[in-house]
Image (cartoon, rainbow, N blue to C red; front, side, top):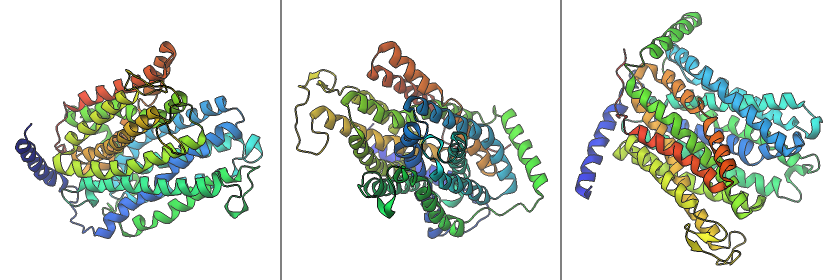
Length: 476
């Protein structure tokens, strides 16, 4: 496409987006810049809990020390996370429908934030070999924390088209993801420097009893408690319906039933949710297995994995900002197609790096150093990190664009209900991609072919998006 043709399409898409963004604030409530920033700042407070608890700090400690057997611990962590995801998948559509009938979303966000704060703080009592809370109690706290995190996304995300200025839904969505990743980066650095890697951890914490790792739970709880306050104070909500709870619950459930029965009318939204159900599994697995793959192929230890995570967090910040601007300029669907395509291309190229080769076909003498760096001194390592950094930009941009597209497709008065279905689409087949990776790895005996299975999910989802139109569904 020529530059003139591309520019013309971008202008037309931008005008269309301004029109489609406008309806959800039907109550004509003025949303100040502070209110919009507070909406995005909520992700600054919430998002680090996933990274620090579920990825880098508490999860390895739970598997290795709380359970006492890394293999059994990893399996148990997976089971707990799976059950939490199933709870969200089953409850989110119903809760969303009830919230839409009742009008307000912030009380629901506050409820799930309270669950996260309490469960995160109590993880301090997860001591090795059952010295503190029982293994069942710790597993329950982890499940509750995951449930609160995912459920809060439903109601917070449903407020996006109401809070954002017309034509700026994508930018605000991307800003939220960017702030969440900046916060994650800062808090991860703080924990690594002053607790995890310090010879004398801050506050005199005892390394023998793993207090330097257990402190992550209370830190995330305090961080969330502090930074959810601006959202609760200054981000406006829809007015309440002023009807009894019994009436609201009944109406919400009946509305959900009508929506499920009338999915033929909402066929365009259903196509999008089906496509997202597939490609979202691929995005999640790219995020979760990238470090595992690199550790196996290049033999990275804890320090390398930590630095790798920090580097990716920096590029993830760019992904949120870039994805949001793209969505407002050329449309959320087209932007999502571009970023998913970037993940696929980058994912393919990344598989071509190994200690003895670059780009699949160019041989490399293992161990040959090309850079005087503390870590990642070889050509294949630097090449892999460079490609995966670009993949990180595209992955986070895809997450932001996915939320923006949902906000532009869902009917106005059923926004939270449809974001509940959006959450369901993200969890319904969450088991499929990990199983596919496991099967492909086992059959081929190769980590590269195992990771290639993820690309299939991304490609199928990308094809599915071609059947989706970017237009708001008319309510029936």
